[in-house]
Length: 348
Image (cartoon, rainbow, N blue to C red; front, side, top):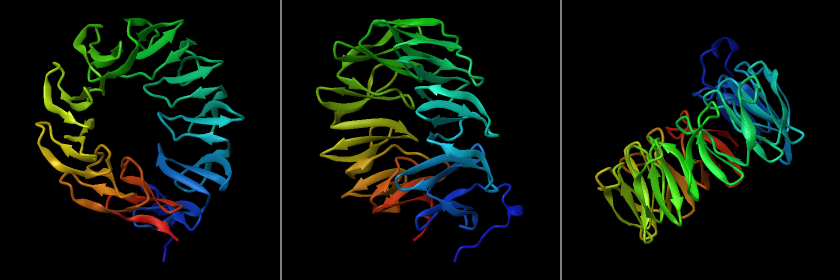
């Protein structure tokens, strides 16, 4: 039996989307209902507001509620994204804009696309050209680029009339790029591709790791996964191989472990290359908040850093990561959230 939490007790509550049959509301960590299930979808609170959808299974309108259940952003938008840096992107009649925490439209829906704000800037697109706006809607970096990445470590990769280079947050040209492809900077280095080979640049534009890899990922926790002749391993920032290039695939390090694939199965190695969790899963995602989402024989669950299956592999779907203690899962056609202890915030 669910209990309802009095409003005077919700001030410091981290609200969790709760599904009852086909309706969604919000509860606390003890499954006390705070906002009655009446929406057709809900997502976790961010910046103090919960994302909700009204309508039916064929689609509806989107908005946001506060912790008391009051609608603060009208449920009138065709789409929306969670709040980031105090603003949420909204879509109305196919155009993107932004609202603030009071529901006020601060950037009118006029863009063909807009990404969430990050460090005070949002990437936007209009009529096939990209640039960046600030939180007041001022186009601080002109919409003139044919392509523009997000900012990574203060730099964005842009292209105009076939010329590629990195810009800073003032829109100033920092590094010219005479390469076929680039990745954003991570831990001070950016991956680049030329004639089918990958290497890495520093922030001065110097190629500090030669173009000698068939494929590569960015640096995380000091290591990057690389491919040579169909096999994968890891290198450090000097370009030295730290984990033997012998795996069928590999993914970035997270929380001290890197995922690797061997004989068709995924497991984890530590920074020395020692196998910590033997490859036995059909897929394994990077660790987040101490857990990794894994799949075996079509069922999904979560393991800890020692390989213990702390949340049973019983779900038909599980999100790649836990975020703020929650993960989205699905059994058959019913999706709902779970906590890191396996608590299911769901009632049939």
